[in-house]
Amino acid sequence: MILFYDAEVFPHDWLLVIIDPTNHQKHVVINDANKLASFYEKHKEHIWIGYNSRHYDQYILKGILLGFNPHKISKFIISEKKPGWQYSSLFQKIKLYQYDVMTTHNSLKELEGFMGNDIRETTVSFDIDRKLTKEEIQEVVSYCTYDVEQTMEIFLHRKEEFDSHVALLKAFNLPLKYISKTKAQLAAVILKARKLTRNDEFDLILPNTLKIEKYKHVVEWYKDPNNHSYEKSLEIAISGVPHVFAWGGLHGARDKYQDEGILVNVDVASFYPSLMLEYDFLSRNVEDISLYKKIYEQRLRLKAEKNPMQLPFKIVLNSTYGAMKYKYNNLYDPRQANNVCVGGQLLLLDLIEKLEPYWTLIQSNTDGLIGKSKGKETLIK
Image (cartoon, rainbow, N blue to C red; front, top):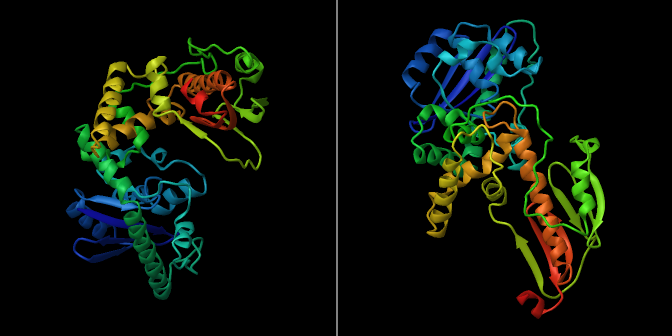
């Protein structure tokens, strides 16, 4: 069973609108903590779905249940720009199977506009320093209800995301409470990562198979300590194409290129997961690398069978790299993440160098190349 919800908080008032799509019921709770607690007790085994609820609404809900002032929590999150979980450790005591529909940085209002819907705003100020009038309460309830309905519509557009989340829990026998976690957090749980602190972010280890000669100066650029900053990048012509090498990937393209002939798209499948396994670039916080390898092999087998169950395995594999760059994740290991990204770029550069006699490079990106073959016979070579 699922519920959709949204909270609105003012200095002297608060309210929640909760919609139960299964039973076609709407519940409105206004300044009544006991009523909310009663509803929660009856529905705490449900999945509560909101928009940006991971960062905001869940803490308002939990705070009210704990007897906190919701406006203080709201100010802590919005005005002071602090994560809600820092407000109180007691939040952990409230069981809430919470799922956030928000998967991009777009606000709910922006998505309403993208969908061609009314971008509805309340005329009631959220800073109004008095009790709201009956008319103002009614307006806010209407506004909040609309937001919940829009959240439901976005959920339907993104239902595959939710289904993949549930599939991830089922595939790895995880409890429902983990529905609240991001895919990167789930990857850390599945891989049994244990967070460790290190100070070797730029101690790069390059792939031992590199054989770059013509463009060796790119390799040296990455080795130079003066360039060990995420603000730095290298702009350089490679194979006649302007390129940018940085710490997040590479990009190169011929300007306004038009041509015809034999065009070849070189796409490296599962590039980052393959690098982690081949060169031991997986987060060092994972004690048993064989677990990641098993997931990798299982995913390839299921994909070959065209089995949809390959999706949760793919999610774990692809979420791991991003998690290695996020300091609050147990997989956090920026050195290994840099090894993956830089190593991947240099391996592609190595490939570009080797292909120069056989094709004309058109475009490069982080996990692939596009070029024009110089003839059918070169494809055989």
